[in-house]
Each structure stands twice: as structure tokens, then as C-alpha cells.
Length: 225
Image (cartoon, rainbow, N blue to C red; front, side):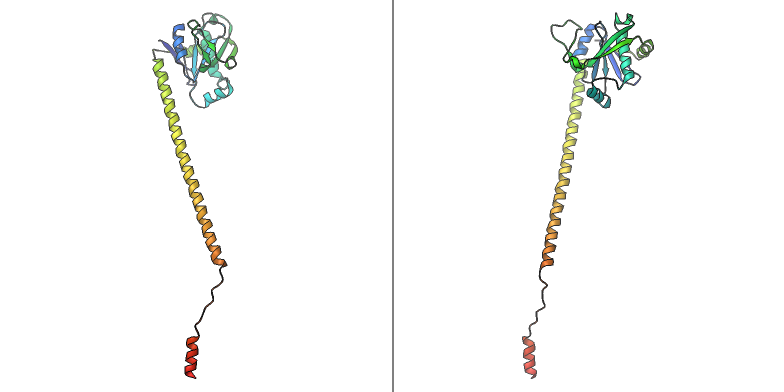
């Protein structure tokens, strides 16, 4: 399938399908890092913003909105408005966005149609106006590609699992190091207490008195006398 890729001024990647048939594959093979955009109540392209794993995505997952990246949000809204046959003709439209994971596709839905698992996770940006300059800048970064979306998603999942396993190994390694440190500290404290007991025992013993065998002296005196 053909996919259009764009790059925002921030360096983040945005992509969308050529038509509703491509949208089906984008829905099926999206990433948990993706945020889906669409013009509210009108036909439009499905635009996806890919948030890299890290602080930006963590903030989005924490707050549920993209207010922390206002310029990127504005650009995504402008792009999806410009790629709506009806929406691009209107002065203002509303745009909705939600995590890819919140998209719901059932067998009863027609091609390109989508629903949501949780409506509370759908954010609406009201009164989005035409932004020609922003769209022009995005168009200059546009690349047409024919990616294997299924293979890319599989590779992404393998990479994530590998990183998780590496973190788990490192965590267990640090646990072992800490356990060994605590063991040595405990052992050293035991030795210290043992030494203290031995020292106290030695100090409390009576001072030994010198003993003299006088029998020889008596005998010598007797011989002298």
C-alpha cells in the first residue's frame, strides 16, 4: 500500500494513507506510539503522529492530551483538515485525536469506518482553521513509500521485547549486587560483634597473680643454717 510520510519541524514523524483502503491497513498495523487524527463528523484522511518512546509519549499517556507539544498538535490538525474533501473548503472544522490503541474496528463497519473503545480518551480540538503555510512546509517533506506495515510492526514488537528483557537482566544484576553488598555488611557486623565480645571477656577476667614455689628457698635456708 502507499503511505505518505511527513516530518514536523520538531523532527517527529507523521504519516497517512492514500485513501480509505490504505487506512484499513494503517488501523490494523498501527503502533502503540501512534496518535490518530481525523476531522470530526466529516470524511478525511487518517493522520497518525508517531511519538517516540520517552518523555513526550510518557507525558501524553499521563495527561491524555498533546498540549505539551502545541506546534506539533497544530500541524497535525492543519494537515488532516487539508486532506478532507469537505473540510478543506470550510473556514473552520473540529478535529479529534486519540491513541491508536483506542481505535475499534468491527466486521460490521464499512471500509475506512472506525469507532472507539473509550470515548473519554478522544480529544476534540475545536475551530481548526486553514493553515496554508504550515501545510506547505509539510508538503515539502512529503515522501511516498510502500512499506510492509505488518513486518514493521513485528520488528517493532521484537525490538521492544528485546529492550524489556535487557532491562530485566540489568535489574536482576543490580539486585544480585545489592544482595551481595548487604550480605557482606551483615557478615562484617557479625565479625565486629564477635570481636567486641571477645575483648569484653578478656577485660573482665581477674588479673593473674604471680606464683612462686618457696620450697627450694626453704630448703636452701635450712641447708645454710
